[in-house]
Every structure is written in C-alpha cells, then in structure tokens.
Length: 314
Image: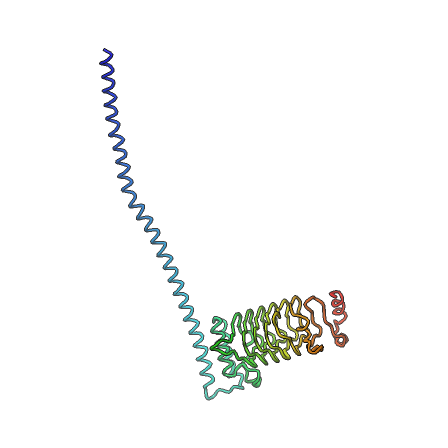
C-alpha cells in the first residue's frame, strides 16, 4: 500500500517537472528571440546617432571653411578695390597732389578700408601709400595724407630676408595702433604724434629724430633700437620696457610719465663721457618721483603744487 502511494507521488512530481521544463525553455526562447529582434534596432539607432553627429561635425567644419573663405574673399575684394581707387586717382591727368579735395577721397577710402581689413592687408596698404609718397614727412604738408583715426592695431611691420622695412620719415600722427609691432624697421624721422600705441613694440629699429609727441606708449617695448634726438615730449611711457636697449642720446623726455618703467639710469640720462645728453624736465621718473626744472616753476601757475608732489615722492 505505501509503495503504491510513493509510486503515484513520484509519477506526479515527474509529470510536474516535465511540464515546468518546457515552460522555462519557452520563456528563454522568447527572450532570446526578443533580444535578437531588438539588438539590430539598437545597433541601427546607435549607428544613426553616431553618423548624424559625424555629419553635423563635418557640416560645421565645412561651414567654417566656407565662412573663412568668404571672409578672405571679402577682405581681398576690399583691399583690391582700395588699391584700384587710389591708383585711378593718382593716375588721373587732373590729379593735383597739393589739392586737399583730391586727397580727401583717398583719405576716406583708406580709413574706411583699414577698419574692415586684417593686419597683413593693413600693412600692405601702408607700404603702398608710403611708396607713392602719400604719408611721408619729408614732403610738404599739403602733399601728405592725413590718416588720423586710422586703425592699425596689431599690424606687424617686420624686416625679413625678402622684405625691407624702410619707413623713414613715415607720417602717421593720430593713429590707433595698440599692439602694433615694428621689427628691424628704419623709422628715422617718423612722426606718430598724438597716436595711441599702447603695448606697441619697437625692436631693432632706428629711431633717430623720431617724433613721439603726446603719444600713449604705456606698456610699450623698446628693445635694441638706435636712438638719436628721439622726441617723447608729453608722452606716457608708464610701465614701458627698455630692456636690452642701447644708450639713448639727446632724447627728449620733457613732460613724460615714466612711472613703473624699467629704463635704467644711463639710458634715462643718456650718459656719455660722464655728461648727460637727454632732456628730462617735469617728468615723472620710474620710482614715482618728479624731475622738476626750477626755471620753469616760475612760469608754471601750478608749480607750487608740483614741487610739493615731488617732495612727497622723494
């Protein structure tokens, strides 16, 4: 009796197990089929996203290149048009160099073009004007082009193995020229009166008789230049650098602000055979003290106040 019961129970268990196994197998099969069905869709989706991102990146690069090329073409067109207009005016049989009405169209064209051009094109326009004797101080004033307000910021004038940088007597008063660079240039007799030349650089240049009257030369760099009767009258040379400069002879530092400059005493005073050659009147020295000329104090209504300032600094 007991054996029969046990046999029946075993049979039922076996039947149950037999019924369960196919059920689990079915579920596994369903999951496998589902995974196999979903994986291609996921892979395709990932591929689509990656492909789209790559296409967008390529399109962005292409747009940037197109915009750059379009910008370069516009700049070249502006430059070419500027040169063509100037050439046409200069070659006109009716052109009179001393007639301000004839120079004014060139002035307007140049100043407008300089606002829209990049540094290399600006440099080339200046060289072109100089070559055509339109911005030279050794010609009569009525022959000179007035470029006051022209933007020459960050323009680089540099001597190279293929190019000379001869700008002797260049006439550029009142220009806006922050970060302008002159390297290896001949600038004897140049005139930058009233210009803004903040953070400008002059390296290995000749600056004999150069005129820097009332110029903003704050944080400017002067390195290994030749100075002879260079005129800095009334200019701001705050935090300027003269490291590596040659001795400055017969340089005018009258009414100049040299506060924070690294200029050395022999450079500042132009020491030569124990004699000073430079003019240093009513100037603020690098250490903040003032160099005041006693003979001018009588003429200056604010002299008393200036003397007091000098004494406090000392």
